[in-house]
Image 1 (cartoon, rainbow, N blue to C red):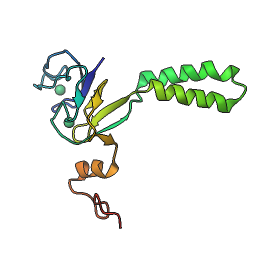
Image 2 (tube, rainbow, N blue to C red):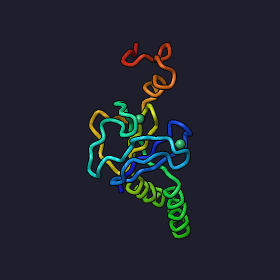
Image 3 (cartoon, protein in one colour):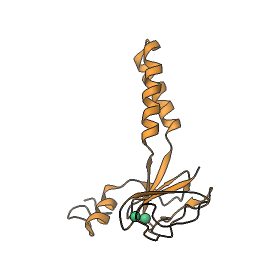
Length: 146
Ligand SMILES: [Zn+2]
Ligand SMILES: [Zn+2]
């Protein structure tokens, strides 16, 4: 299921919309917004919540996944005589189970269950700082490594 999660501009509540749902006002304060999840199969290249073009992807470590991993660990540990093999198997499962999400640098909207355009890269602290502080802080200019 593809979906988008974003923050209400007025009350900052976390709102979720599944693909196929139409936009609707904030579930908590009623503030209007026109955010809707893109259709399944869309390639994400701009933020569906605010239209911003700088996005990054990261592993989606949500609560449900965390619980699933604890359960998996409990299953694996008792009969794993060679802990290293157990950890390797667990690592592999984590890699397969945990999907990646696309996040907006500007509004932190999370796009889940989509592919993303090639320009979307892993999280970059310099780009993040530029959004938080405005200009890049001294010594952290992009493209200057001397
Ligand atoms: Zn609200
Ligand atoms: Zn955004």
